Length: 288
Image (cartoon, rainbow, N blue to C red):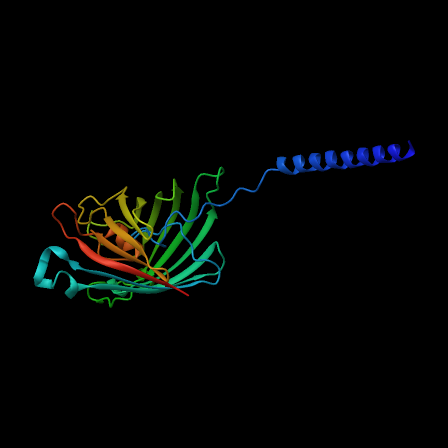
């Protein structure tokens, strides 16, 4: 009888511990799990010409080479654009996972472009629906200016600035979209009445559609919200492909704008898809 009482006590104690453990597990399951950030909406650091919300990771170095060849419509006369290429060479460094710095040099106007890129918030699974990134550039025009044409020219006239807000959403593994409001300020601009503006506002938009494991189709367009009265330039439209080769991302692009620095791309596009000039080129990123 005493033995049965001992066994009963042990069983009751064991049952109590099981019930306590189940209650503890239930409490742990009820604790909200931290929402995970959605992986990059875009494979490349650029959609085509426009910046994407993808960032270089901490301590990553990117080496960038881009070309935009001449007008394709001239055909063999300029060897389908290869005789009139513009080049961009630059580097990007991830100071942190959310803050990048970059410097590049462009054939167009011998421009040096410095930029910072910083993530403000990330899209979360079952949480915040967008990734928001800030992007700021400063251009230095390295061209030689004729003092007879510009008698009051100052060194500060070489500077131009852009402020951009990149807002993207990844809808699925295959589809992403980005909206980019842009403010541009030029210290030097065309002084002929109605042909250029010191301050310009642009609304850019771009998208990515994955077509295979390593290839995606990208499309972007930028609308100038306050164009000049006598407008020589056009809104840039660019289509391209991302090709992921493992060690680097290779982008092929067809654009109505030949310059690659952001300010000239948004405000000085001379081409048109409907009967105007089209420029073929590529962006090549190598990460270290």
